Length: 273
Picture 1 (cartoon, rainbow, N blue to C red):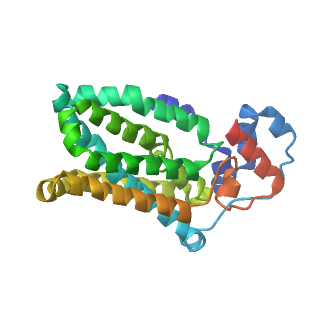
Picture 2: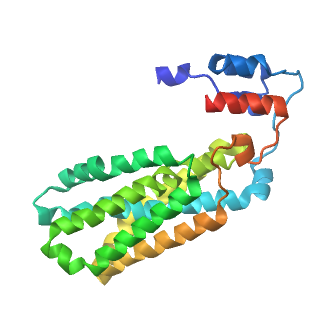
Picture 3: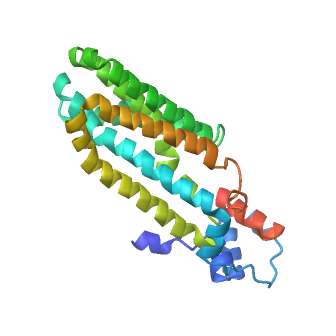
């Protein structure tokens, strides 16, 4: 709590919400003195007085899609995280906790590393779409090879590992990391939009915790896993259709927030630094 209180407000907050240009200049200088030296700050205010209603009218599609994507991916992700280990670990003579640690070290962590290297080169959308396709393929294999997986648990570990790797590389590092809620929302409503997207994800996680076991019991494993595959395909299509690409762009561009050129460049520079 002490360290968090020592972090200054962002330059974008100070300019667009607090209306304090001088404090924003100090923050930028603390990060990138060169950018501050080449920025001519005027006394004119760039403070944003628009409300959520205004931005929802202009950004409704982005806000809704970002929230739905987190909702869908948390249903799929939490179902896999909660029930995958318990289904496979016993056949391998492992506890669910030990199985989960193996998945994290061997598959999830490398997936995050790949995402770090690719997310601003390849882009958010292709990373999430192809990561989702990888998850779907793994889920279909899990259904098709169910009988063999029971007899050969190592095969199940490999398939579940592929599911974990592609999920961590894709949706786990894009939608469920909160990127779209931040990058698609203007400064004035960014925290509110992020709160909405996070809440959507938590609703999905809670829902799958209660509903997935019921579906599993009533209709069987293949139906439950197949439903996860269908939801993942829907999320991949929604990503391709409803979200703009935001790689290597400033927050002013990704959120379609208009600022004058000089402060905009300085704010972008402080953010990138």
